[in-house]
Length: 214
Image (cartoon, rainbow, N blue to C red):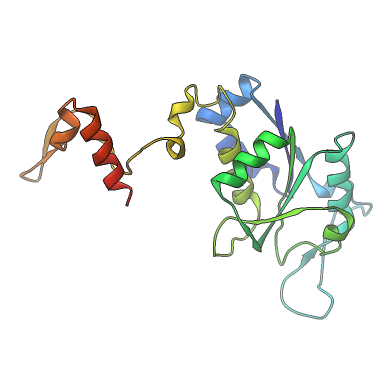
């Protein structure tokens, strides 16, 4: 079973996405497991504060290294081959190939979610991490990227999708899909399913799908 260990200040951010549809079923069927570690639980101050002003000046707050290190340490305990993913806009782009590689190689995946101005960089000196970005843009935190990694890795695990043929990237799939009815009318205009999809000629259908991917 693949276990995702999430380091986050906002555990409830994951409730909705993990509590619905395919990922919910994957958890219930014990195909995957998700464990959450809040750095606030590893603080020593009575307010459970984890952020401080940045050295060198600048706006915003920076998450302290030690609470995050201790959270990672607990997630990593007795799991020497665990993969640690640290989300940063300057990281390597998340791809299907990376998700496939990590999912096959690692039973334990630790996802470190930053917030505010980021996490003290000394965390990266304490642990070997893959620096990952989910796109050429900046988000307010690492929770959404973590969900993307969980989804992209989990869907490749046998049994999660029910049918591995559902992996669009492993077959000829078109971004345009259609279902019943064959024809419907909206504001006086008729909308039809492309004739090739109704032809029953599989070679022509596959060629049409391939042409739509360009």
